[in-house]
Structure formats: structure tokens, C-alpha cells
Image (cartoon, rainbow over all chains, first blue to last red; front, top):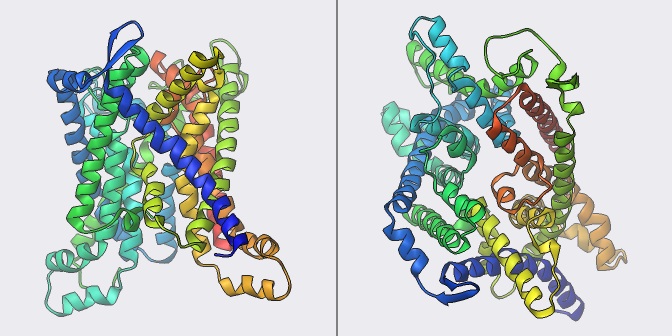
Length: 285
Length: 283
């Protein structure tokens, strides 16, 4: 490199290194270090695995941890199942103006804050809400029904919040599939199901993987939906992190929880990438 | 529809019905929020008590409208300030990143690129606590050494800005990189041949080419910052941005005031999003 180009190179490298170093890497190392210490007395700390021991032996913590993981996987699967036919419809069945309008309709809620979307579900599902009133009016129930604060409601909310992050990559990959390939599948005697399994899904795999990763991450890290729709027993891991940090000021245990969440999400994301033989760079970049 | 593929009529109707149902599911919560902003009642729920503008313009208790509610207005200001800072910072760093990854080959490039992508797969709340923990370690260190208390390192707007910046920069980098990859390097070389120095060539040729992507990244970063909740929640001090202020009110019990704020938010962000889409179609 010529000397001028070398200077430019370092000038361009500096912001990247400062950003990643000061805001991503060092803070996470610091968080790990905090999670590895135990308070002996006022201002005196000792390095130990006590926080992790606490997190792994207390049944409530452990249960919440696994519950969050399982529910997030479930939410991801549900989102994929619901989004796939819709994405296929937008990418392959709708044409011209209708296609554009449908895609735009999918994007608009994506720009509306999560709080507003969750709030909408509360208005619909609470005891005095719309659905409860509708059911009474139809004569299906004879008193107000409370539909908030259950796992099913929370699932509806989780799927709703992250739906668009599944639809967009799916539509993009499905659009790139040539119609004639699908036709060829039928010409060769394939049935609807076998064409779906042998042609459409393999082609859509990149979109499926990136959609699943994003949706899983969003569900796992979601705080609003489980707190607002899941009620007292929602037991979401981010809620416990918040409680340890802000309510109890127990940063050591909170940091350990944070690190566990980070490990969990990394393991599942890398697992998905490994299973499908893709890299993070291809999927996200 | 792919015309050559036979599908039974009932299948098509069933499929169409499913898609219609999906869009109903998508639209329902937002519609309900919007409609109840006009309900002349203390609660955003049935029965419908009649139409009113009070939740926007009302000046008297109990129906104080958005435009007379100081707390909400202040938090909108806070959010806008934070979002502006985050947008400008992340687009600046995003642009330098894009140039770095597009123009230079160096050892560790692939590693740095993956590192750059990582903030996308770290849960927002974990990003928040790690920044919180590190800044307080710094603040405590400075206090122990020099007995100076740096307020800026305690939860507050600076931390909120840094926390949001930490992951929005990745998105800005991706948006700008995508456009830079389409740039024809020979144009820049032509400028150099005509006697421009490198900086002038970049300023007059490359940056104008990148402008649509940079403006797009500003808008996306602004919207993402404005709506961010998870990271902000962990870093917020006494000045709450809008999402946090609304969350606090929602916990106490909601009035149609929140619907009115939500409706304005929806209108604002849809407008920005539409502008962005139209703008990118032209560019």
C-alpha cells in the first residue's frame, strides 16, 4: 500500500475498531468478569462461579431459562408455518400492483413500535376488550372473559411482533425462484406436495434460515410482549435479567443471567447455521 | 399465479381466504389502537361513548390531549434528540466501514466482518446491560483514582445513545455497503485521470452515488432508535424517551391518550417509511 493509502486505511479502520472494541467486545468481557465474582462483604469481591451455581441450582431460574428457550423455538416454528404460505402467495401468486400493495402492507407494521403493537393486542384481548365483548354479543359466553396473561396470548403476541422479519426474507428468496422451474417440476409428474418439498423449500432455505434466526433472536430477547401479555407467571428470562439489574441491583447474578442468554442464543444460532451449512456472513450480510 | 399449473377452484378460494385472514390478523391490533384514540371515555375499551378529538387537543382534565400533555411532549423531544444523534453517528461510522470493507484487503478482514455482524445476533437487553456494566466500571475506576464523578457514564441519555448506536451501526453499514458494491470504480479512476486528487474524486463522484443509501440509512436508523425499547430500558436515566414513558403509563393503566400517541407514532413512521420507499424507487 502506498503511504497515503495506508493513512486512509487506518483512518477508516479506527472508527470500526473503536465501535466494536468499546461498545461490543470490552463491555461483554466486563459483563463476564462481573458475573464471575461473588460479594464477600461490603466492597470486597472474590472470583467464583457462585452466580452460575445459583442460576443452575435454583429451580425457578432454570425453569424460566428453558421455558424461554422452548417458547422462542415454538414461536419461531409457528411464525414460519404461518408466514410461508403468505410469502409464497405474495411472491408467486399475486401479480403486478396487488403484489406491491401486499408487500407494502406487510412492511407498514414493521415500522410501528413494538409497544403500540402489544398495546393493540391488550385492547383486543383484555376482559373489557373487543373479543370478549364480541363473544358476549354473539351469545357464546355469558360473562366477560379474560384472555390476557396466558401462554397462548403471549404466543400470539410473539408471533405477531416478529412476523415481518420472516415474511420479508421469504418473499425475497421465493421471488428469485423461476416460475419455469416449478412448472418443470409439475411436467415431470410431481405433485403439489413433492414440488414443495423438492423444489420450493430447498430454494427458499436461505430465507428460511435468516428469517428463523432473526425471529428466534427477537423472541428470546423480547421483554415487552411477555411482560404485557404474559402477566405475572410469564416468567421470561429477559424479565429476570431486568429484575436482577434494576429492581434488586444484584448485578453479579444479572450479569450471569445475561451471559447465559447470550450463550443460549449463540448456541442456537450457530446450530441453525451449522445444520444448514451456511455462514453468518451469507445469512446476515 | 403461475397460469400453467392447474389448481382446483376450492383450493384457490381456500388459499385466498387464508391470505385475507393473515392480513386481518396483521391489521387488527393497529386498527383497534387507532379507532379507540377517538373514544370519548376514560378507557380504551368498549362501550363506544362517541367520537371526540379530546385525546389530541383536549386541554382540561380528565381528557388532556397529547398536545397539552407536557410529559409526553418532552419524551417525544428526548426520543427525537436521541434518534438524531444515533442516526448521524451510525451513518458516519457505517460509511467508513463500508469503504473499509469494500476497498481494502487486509489480514483479519473476514474476522472483523463477522464481528461487525455480531450486534445483530446479540439480544438487545444483553447489549444494554453490557454497556451499563462497562460504563459503570469506568465511572467507578475514575472515582477511585481521582475522586471525580463522571455523571455522563451513569444511566442517562449518553448511554442510551451509545447503546442504540452499538447495533444500529451494523444495519447502517449493511445498507451503505450494498450500494457501494454496485459502484463502478472506473468512474472514480476517470476523475483521477482528469486531474482530481483522491479525496475530490470520492467527494464529487462516489459520495453523491452513495447519497440515496446514506439517506435511507439515516431514516432507518432514526426509526429504529425512536422505537427501540429493550436496549433503552436498561440504560435510561431520568429523561425517558417516548417508548419508556409510554411503557410506564401503560403499567399504571391506559387511557385513550396512549392510543392518540400511538396513532400519531403510526402516522409519523408510516409517512417516513413511505417517503423512504418512494425515494429509493427514484434513486
